[in-house]
Length: 219
Image (cartoon, rainbow, N blue to C red; front, side, top):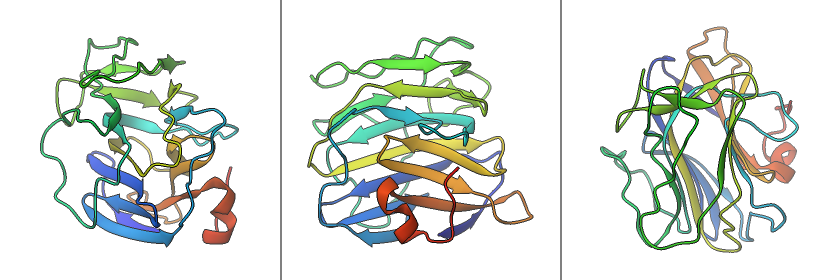
C-alpha cells in the first residue's frame, strides 16, 4: 500500500497503467508502486468502466473528478510532471471526458477528438456537473458518495497496453472509496489512519487482490 497525506480540498492526479510487463500506479507524477504482470489484465466480457464506484460494492466515491482519460498505451515510463492543462486527444486516446458543462446538468459529453468509435456514457443517480470546483475547464463531475457513478460501455482495450487516469478531489476519505472499476481492475482508497487526511492507495487486479494486498478486505 501507499501512505499518502493530503487534505480533502486538494486536487490529485492518479494514474494506473499496464505496459505489457508491469502494472504501475502513480500519484501526482510519482511512481508509487510497480507489480510484475506479463499477461493482459483486462478480460473480454463486459468492457464497462465504472467511475465513482465498483460493482457489488458500497464503497462509493465522495467528491469530484476532472479530466478522465483511458488510453491504449502506457503513457508514463516513470515519474512525470503532472498535466498542467486539459488533455488533448491523440491516436492513443480511447476515452476522454473533460467534465465540462452546465451546473447541475447530467449531460456528460466525451471529447470525440480524433476519429474513433463512439462510447456510450451514462450518469447514474445524482452524478452531475458542478461548477463549484474544477481542475481545468469550467466544471467537474460531482459524486455524493451514495451510489453515484459514471458508466461507459467501452473501450475494449483487449491485450494492448493501457493507462487509466483522472484528477480527483475527495470530499470524504472515510472507509473505502473507489475511483474506478471495470469488474477486473480497480482503483480504491482505504482510510486506516485516525487522521482523516491520511489515506491508503490501493490498486491491483481484482482476482489478484488478496495475493497482492493480503491485509485488505474488499467491501
